Image (cartoon, rainbow, N blue to C red; front, top):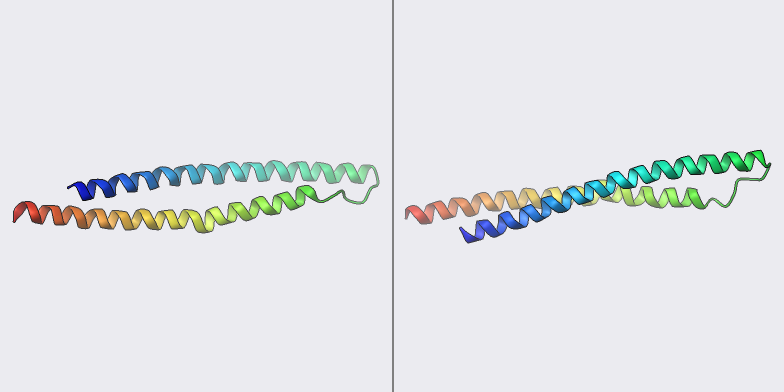
Length: 104
């Protein structure tokens, strides 16, 4: 029983980490929206002053943040989900083995 309990503990830690990663992805998406808004305002200000476009710093920052968000959503979250699925399978196997040992 101890082995399945250890696996359950590990699965629960991954589940907690998954929630934190999802929260981070959501916060990052909000930040990207705010950066887009600021970038749009900045571009409008340059047009008012008849200056050509600004430094592009915000655009570069948006691209970098989008890359991080994409990595989280497309790689990290699926990897954690896969690990949780594997642990669930291993927990089932360990519990079945425990049941066999109790009966035998």
